Amino acid sequence: MRRGDYIIKYGFSKMLDVSYHDAIDMVIDKLKNEGFGILTKIDVKDKFKEKLDIDFKKYLILGACHPESAYKAILAEEDIGLMLPCNVIIYEKNEKTGISIIKPSMAMGMIKNDKLKSIAEKVESKLERVFNHL
Image (cartoon, rainbow, N blue to C red; front, side, top):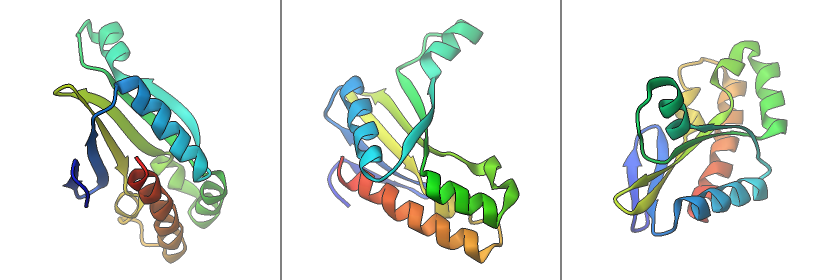
């Protein structure tokens, strides 16, 4: 683990000394390098303002998808779409930018399907490479 990284059981997390917007660009670029696309972008700050009239810090949820793996996962477990895509969050905290990436092995660990477990582990290794290159 490198300086700035911290442990959460269900994801990879770290704080970066880069701007929020630069972090978004970095994360998307690193995801693309590992074959992921972005299916969704949820701007939590905007949604909280719109729906609750609450001012909140910058906080973005990216729904990342590795198409080949998603296809294999759905073939292995049709209802796995409930657990897709892989979420990545980017947020401001104490003048730094936090990045957290889901660990698919944890998210899908409750499903007893060996084919799915293997797919989740492969996707997780790709996401870990993304994390390590940030």
